[in-house]
Each structure stands twice: as C-alpha cells, then as structure tokens.
Image (cartoon, helix red, strand yellow):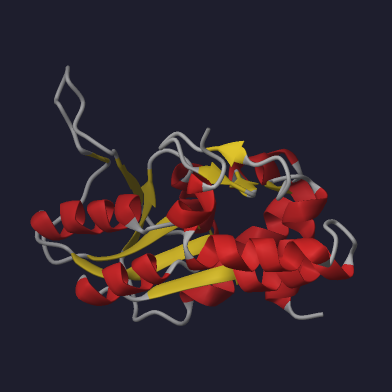
Length: 212
C-alpha cells in the first residue's frame, strides 16, 4: 500500500472524510455534496497525526528550498505549525481577511521581503483560500515556492486556478485514491462509485438534482 492510499484509508477510518452519496451534506456555500472532509479531526489521533506530518516533511522536499512555513487559516494552521516545528523553521499564518481591530494583521507572524515560503493547507477544493494566501504573501514581497495540502478533491477548476497563479500544488492524497479505497473497503457500495465520479466532474450540476 502506497502512502497516498494509506492516508486516504486513515482519513476514512477516523471519519475525517465522510461519504454519504444517498444523503448528501450541505456545504457552507449551499452546494450539496456526497463528501465532507475535515482534516482537523486527525489532530485528535497522535499516530495518524505523526504519519501525516512525516508525509508533509517528505513531500516538502519536492519544492525548492524555503525559509519558512505559512499555514492558511484556520485548518492549515495546526498542520503548518507541526511541519515548521519538525523542520525547525519559522511559522506564520494567513487570515482570510485582515483583523478589524488591533494591528489589523492579515498575516500573523514575522515575514521579510525576499523570503521563500511554503504554504500549507488541509484541503483543496477550488483552491480559492490557498491562492488568496499565496497572493497575500507575494504582496509582501515574498516568493511562494508552492502549496502543500493533505487532500484534494481534484476539481478541474482548482487545477486551472493554480496554473493561472503560476503556483505549484502537491497533496498527500486525493479524491481518486480515496474513492478507490472506499470501494475496496466497502465504505460505500460499488453502485455509488459512479455517483462519486459524477459529483467530482460537475459538483454544481450534481447538487442541482437535490434542489426542491
């Protein structure tokens, strides 16, 4: 079993990833989805948490050398901090928007123009929040070597967005691998495989069929 498969298996095991093709979840955007992913759950499982951090350490070697690690608020913060601690590098995090009080920071922590930064995210859907963080760091004169995430839904929109932003993306596991693990472990039925494939291909159209 390769590492990406092992990660997907563990995320399903601890219900960090939940699948429900016949009774979909409702995302904050209002879209219906057969999957819900919250990788903050793995923080409560030390052995799996350690496995993921080791994976982040190894994957980080695929990027050019970097000076510090930046987590995307909020879910990317703990994983980024754990990686930075393991690599003995400085850590910062990037908010979705600047604070409305105090110093009104968008980036928490110290960065300097010219620094090379690896951005850590827990989940890639459309890539919007990650690339927003990338642009915030670039606006401060920093160079972002790429984004490293635990899991990706593999949406075409995300692939295009990262290409247009000229930003490299790597993940520990992804939707294709996870669905295969789910089928093989009987987490979902084989009949649901096509449903999961259709959702990833066009989540908006898939969601529309559930509207009253």
